[in-house]
Length: 292
Image (tube, helix red, strand yellow):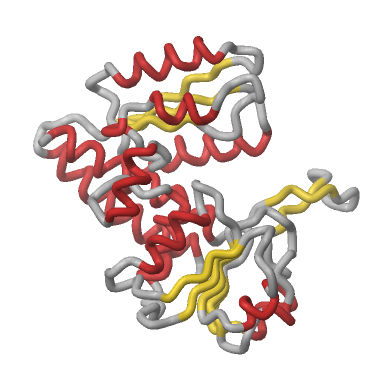
């Protein structure tokens, strides 16, 4: 069993990006610029956004963080997005999810200029992904593909099972794994809450991606010997014995599953760090496209 270390792989990606950014600046050009909007004070969202801003600084990106109150109207948020859409100094726009219930995530997603959609959530980005056209890839699936590439995990002809069909992770992950490229070409089964014989399907998976948001859902009896297991889940589980009052759990029961695998991602320290790496690569791509 080998740990797929997201910290190590993400640092490799960031080192490569920093070198490119240094060359851009040395040529007298401005740095790529990522703008993030955070609505409310969700603790997990605060942590994610702070990490994204920190990583931008590390590789030389410019970054802007716009904070809006929990009670901010949908119209106010859309106005802020439109300002960023029209700002030629901004290359990528990130609206941190989840949003307060009174704001439509779909309307917000569709309001972002597709040329600045570094989250890869816009219908145009999703449509191009399905067609195999160059586009922004949703950051978490993109990060997973980068992780598979970094560790040179064989995928061609493998049976991949993806648990979860969200538009952010599950669906794009299934498309990427089945696509005709060096780290794709899998036969993919996409599972969800109505899938029958889920356990049996998982037991046949050479590559198992768990992205359903249920702590420790995948147990050892669901995984075959030698499988590659990618845990996308990250849930705060209350724990009175923990210093912060909670512990972070993935969708995979790591201690039981890990000994059966050939490769497995930890939580934390796995996919989450690669998500940021994917976001940064998308931002540099947005910059280069807009410069051209």
